[in-house]
Length: 275
Image 1 (tube, rainbow, N blue to C red):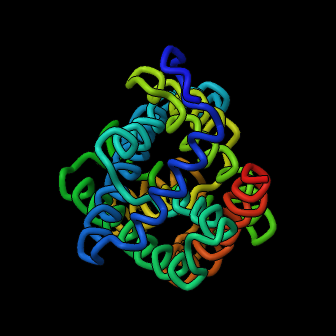
Image 2 (image 1 turned 180 degrees about the vertical axis):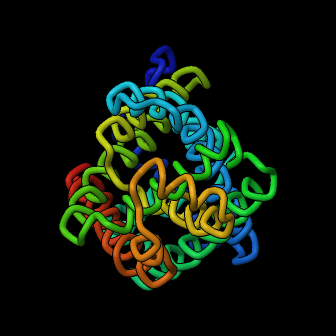
C-alpha cells in the first residue's frame, strides 16, 4: 500500500507508473511525439548553451565543469516539469519490453522518432544562438570556445566516446527515475540537479547535448573572426579545423556516444533496476 505521507513513491510504484507511461507513449500520435522531441532537444541545448557562456573564459577545468554542471541540469528540469521526449531517458522503454507490455519494434520506432526530433530541436537552438550574436561575447572568445568544444567532441575516439556515453546515461536515467519517485516539485528538481551535476563534472558524453555542441561549433566556424580566435587562442590549424564537419560529427561522436547511451540506459540501468 502506498504511504501517502512519504515524500517519495516506492521503487515498485515508480516501476509500475513508468511502464504505464511507456505504454501510453506507444499510443502517442507521431506528430505529438515529434513536437515533444523537438522541445526536449531545445531544452537540453539551452542548458548546454548557458553552461558554455558561463565557463568560456575560465581556465581551471575543475571550476569550469562545476559551474557548467550547475547550469546544464536546467535542460532536464524543463523536460521533467514541462514535458518532452528525450532519447536518453526513453532508453528506459526497455523495462516495458522486458515486462512484455511493449513490443521491441515499438521501442525502436519511438527511439528513432525521438532521436531525430531531439536533433532538430538542438540544431534550431544552435542556429538561433549564432544569429543572436552571442558567440561574439568576450571579443569573440565564446565563438572560439564553441569551436574548441566541438573539436574536442569529434576527437574523442570511439572507445572514449562509447564508454563515456555508457557512464552518462546511467546517471541520466537515474535522474529521470529519481525525479519520478519525488512527489513534489522541489524533490524532482533536486533529483535532476545533483545527478546531472555529477555527469557534467565527470565530463561524460550525452548524445542530445552533443547535438547542440558540435553543430554549434560547425556554425560558429562560418564566422572568420571566431575561426581566427580559435587558431590564436587554442593553436588550431586550418587543416585541423577542416575536420569539424558533418561526417566526423556523425561517425566520430554521435554514433559511438549514442550506442554508449543506449547500453548505459538499458544494460547498465534499466534492466538491472527492473530485476
